[in-house]
Every structure is written in C-alpha cells, then in structure tokens.
Length: 169
Figure 1 (cartoon, rainbow, N blue to C red):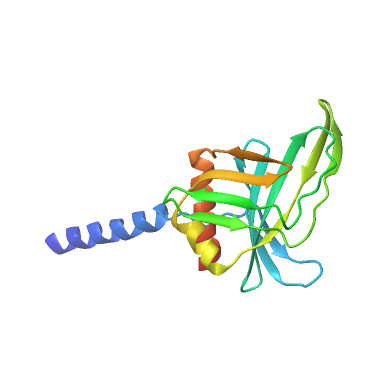
Figure 2: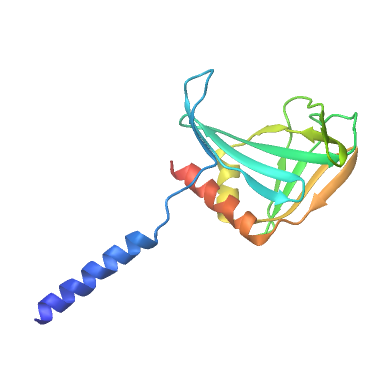
C-alpha cells in the first residue's frame, strides 16, 4: 500500500509538471515565400505606438522589427544613423541600428494622417540571449527627435519568454 502511494505521488508530480509547462506560442509560423525557409515570429506591443517583433528564419538568422506609428504626416526617414536603444532591467543596454533607410508609409485613419515606420534590425545570438535573460525596462529611438517609453511588465516579460523560445528552437 505504501509503495502504491509513493508511486501515485511521483506520477501525479510528473503529470502536473508537464501540464504546467507552457509551449511557446508565436504570432506567425510558416515558410518564407521567397526562400522556403521555415520562420517563427512574435509580436508584442512594447509601448504605445511601438510593436516589437522578434523573428527567426531557418536555423540561425535572427532579426527584429519595430513597428512605429506616429500621428501626423511625417517626411523624415529612419536611417542607419538612427539608433534603437533597449535598456534592460539588469541595466544592460542593447543598441540596434537599421541597415538601410526606411521612409514612412502614410496612412489615413479616422483621426487624420499617421506615419508608419517598420525598420528591420539584424540581431546576433548574443543579443537574443540578453533579451531572454532580462525584461526590457526602457525603449528609446533617436530620429528627428528622440521618442522613448517604458513598456508594461507583462509585454516585456512576454518578449523575454519569446526570445528564450526562439533560442531553444
């Protein structure tokens, strides 16, 4: 009887641990139309008007995108001189620079005109490891005039989890 009780407790412990482990969820998964490489992509609202996307193409190509929406019809572009700063809670600073120039896409909505930017940043495995190790505490992008914000804790932690998932894939 005692052996059955011990066996039952061990079995229940193993089942509850596997039930609590949550699988990685991605915004998009599939095959790239141009290369045929499999990809996984996340999307999290980092701060108001900023969406942050992490992406893994194939086995090793890592990248991120910032989806930035600013009210007004803007004419200036994000260029390789403009830096995206991600300050982590562990006080590390990640600096990302786009490889080319990104002009705004102008979109009319019910509030008037907005300008949308979507700069692409190539990131290294080391940067992805930093994102997986500590939540983002502050975001700042310097173009025309600096724009900064503090992400909400759940979104910042979701980015951290996704970075870890992409590294493990």
